[in-house]
Length: 376
Image (cartoon, rainbow, N blue to C red):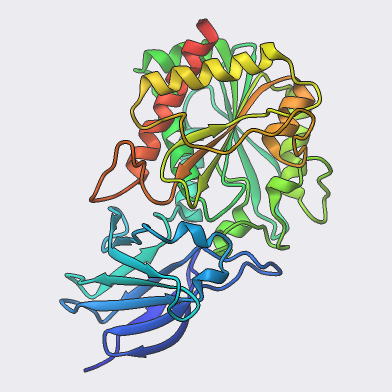
């Protein structure tokens, strides 16, 4: 019996092949460059049609978030369009922690990933399509360490300055699926909520804050091994030019509302994190955040408020994180949206878990909640 073949030499690919034996393989995740972070994987298996394959990804207790593996089901696609879930199990005592994936492809190729990937090629298509919409302005805010553009799409004629930005952590690809959903809606002339939002707001949308890390197959860092969401207090051109470019543009426009879009490895639910603990906290600003969160919970069963991160104590907010820095710097209602790598357990989907399709639908509900929040 010939061995299956495994390859990750492509956009956002990440895996190390330790051994193959027929339809079985032993694998490991490559760390982000110049960093200890590891969690994202994305690879292709070939020579596998009609064969039951077993893939063991080892050393998982040493990854960034080992608590994310119990209950996790790996994403799989045979056409790179539809992403389902492959049967997976986790044993923390096997080979330093092992995720075992079983799947029987119908054809000779199957792709596996931590979450449905969002390629730089698709990013370019998204930016190009949105830039064709009447009233949209494309801006290059700056460049990454590898020379890639930090793309920003601006639209709307209103006075409220709204910033939506995604994928500071490149392995959290669900964030860019969300950004695609937001742009699809806001560029839809037939959508009355989008038309009203464009009347009230000036949108600044950065679909991918970390293009280098995305292309390199990183979980959490840029080309220099830097976690961008710990750079917002003092970003620098040689360490975090991506954050510096975005923050400078925010300084020029001002910010009234901001949403930083992420993914969470362990919590199987969608939730928001706010800016409790900033030095300039006021009850009025906090109430505006609570009101948005309540509106979103009412609008969709794909959002909940019971699970999430504990709030910071008064005066203890980490101002190197974007949500805290933006709320403090501009007096803005800022928040971090977290989506799961697993599923939204309050409203589960056994076939796909949390998926690109649901990310895009949640974005529409977030925009609907924004209009209600603005007009309430």
